[in-house]
Structures are given as C-alpha cells and as structure tokens.
Length: 320
Image (cartoon, rainbow, N blue to C red; front, side, top):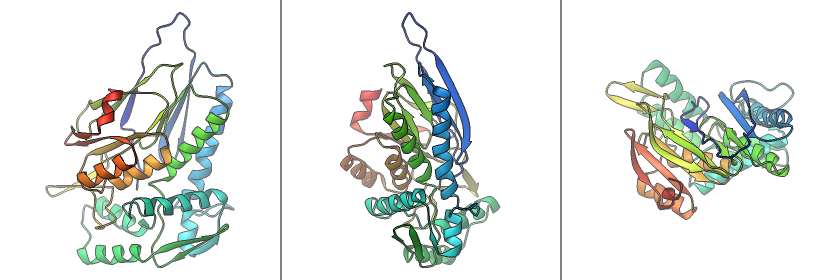
C-alpha cells in the first residue's frame, strides 16, 4: 500500500562540536519506488558498504514486485498470476512475515489486499468512486484468501491477490541494518523514504528528525534520536479530493475503504520491518484501539491530524 511513498521526514543534522571534522560520505540509489540515502560518518570502506546495502534493497524489491514478471525468479506478480509457484528464500521470508503481521494486527494488515488496492488506485486516478457492491465483493474475496507455504513452495487459496507494499521496504531496511550491525558499523543514517528510517549515531551524537506536516510546509514535531528506527504512514501527496472529501491511498482492510482518521502516524522502535507493518495497520485503527495496541507493544508513537499533533505516547517527550 505504500509503493508510491514520498519522503515526508526531513532530517536536520546537528554539527559535531569537536576539534576534528567528521568525514561524512553520502550515497543515494533508487529502489522500491523511493530515493534511498545512506550517510556514513568516519566509516572506512563506506562505498563498498553502500553498494552491499543497495543490493539488499534490490533483492527484496525484485521478489516483492506485483507489477512485473520475474526474470528467472518468482515475483509477487508471478505468484498472483500462477496461483502456485516455487519461490525464493527472500519471498518466503516476506510472505511468512506478512502472515505473522496479519495475525499480530488482527487483520488490520492484510497481505491479500492486492485486488482492493488496485481497485482503489484506479478509482482515485479516475476520480470516480467504486460502487459499494464492488467493494463488498472484493472485501469478501480478500477475506476468503489464504497463503500456504511449504518449504519454498507457495500457493494461493482463493481469488485474492498479494500486495507486500506495506512491509517490503521496512523488511529490506531491517536486513540492511542487520548487515551493518554484523560489521559493527553504527555511525550512519539510512533514510528509506519516511516509511522506514534507521538511525545509527553521528559519532555518538543524536540526529534531529522533523516530522513534516501533510498539507503545509514545516514540521508538527521535532525528535532527537540515535540507534532507533522510525516508520511513518502518511497521506502527504498521496490523497485525492473527490467532491468535498479527501481519500487516502491507505486502505482499511476491515471496511474496504480508504483510511482517513489521521494525516500521519510515526512509530519509534528498534525493528523497521515491524514498525513499517504496524504503521500501515494502525492507520486504519480508531485512536483508542491504536493507543492500546502500540502501548502493549511498548512502542512510542506520534499521531497527527490536520497538520497538528493529535496524540503522542508518554515516552515521546524523552526524544523531544
């Protein structure tokens, strides 16, 4: 659901107050419909590290693609078309994690939302709402679809299609972090386009993260973070106005309609793959349900509506 994500979190860096200047090296590449930037600080062989990080993103981008056939490898598109296929280890990881998130969020994240997602994407492009009966039919198809995995064999039961847009980027980002951690590399900033950002540290210093407003310029919240991940779901530049109503690109899998309770939700934690899925799921939850869900997960979060802070968890002030 976040395939066309835009960068909505702007990173403002604090200059280090030390006698020796920090060597900052930045690398940018395009993957998962997003400009991804990784910045290293006083890090040896940073170019090689950046290339390896890019390859991680590309690997998961390829298998999660639900618009193109794979070239010698099964993609989500291929599985949706064939309904049954041999899959790679990477796609198996993504599918199993998506099923786990579906259970964990009580269906507020649903990997079988593909047909509904396509229906609404076309409707919003045409600025013509789908009929209620069609939405109800597609919702029923989604709910009656299951993903079965045995080893490296996957099968779709039912007529629904898979869409991993709500987890693929966060999952790849978590894999990139695991790679950097394995090399004891912690002085970096990995910006995967708002829905998945991982912050190491700037030679022991915090990063300043501005959560941008959805409709106006500026930020509705400023955070000081290091050694954390932050995931954001937002309608910024991804909504359509039809009549007097704004419609989000993010859907509520319980109703089949766009989720429009909030402008944005940002969740702070350790694991970008889980935060990415949770931010997608929570966008469709009522506020009290959202608060209970994330409190039970021991996660800090910020919710905005109409470019203003709607709610923040108690621990957020520790990062203010």
